[in-house]
Length: 248
Image 1 (cartoon, rainbow, N blue to C red):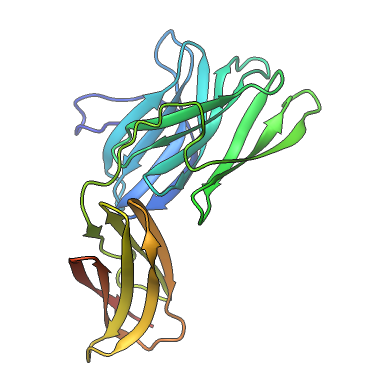
Image 2 (image 1 turned 180 degrees about the vertical axis):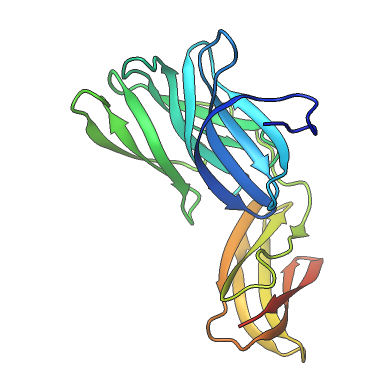
């Protein structure tokens, strides 16, 4: 895999999961540099598959990124670190990166001999919900955890959004659902409103106070007729409107 038009290449050992974000996809997996243990791998691509950045994470032993999910500030990654792949061994591992693949924070869970974090999401309150297994490969047990919006005892490397921005929905044209995303510079009361071509308000999609960060909203247009619509984000003195096309 190349991120610079063939100037250099990364040998991808395995891609384990993928998630869609506002401007493309994030692929999670692992890669094995020559003579070294596996590293966790994240790859960012556009919607047509062009590689935009590649980043690896890990220490002196084997690591893997199992799943990726959008979070308020970027991407939440779950996996396994400090592992030996020829036996079941390692620690549960979660970390968050920003939209450019920079590490914001990480947390390692050493509960028993072999611990895996298989899946994670961020809920509406900002907490992280993690599922996995402890003593994996040794008759292990299901492991569930709920941690704060930034787990305690770590340096979170705070990197909040630096501007207000409303992104183009994707897909567009769409039927029946599309994803709208936006970025907030500071805590604000926001309104996200939908209008038809005649300028009539069709729906209020969001009307609440939100903290700084990146947000995603899946919009279902099942009750609307085909046509051109406009969605407007208002946050304090900031306002931006974009166009979308519903085709049934």
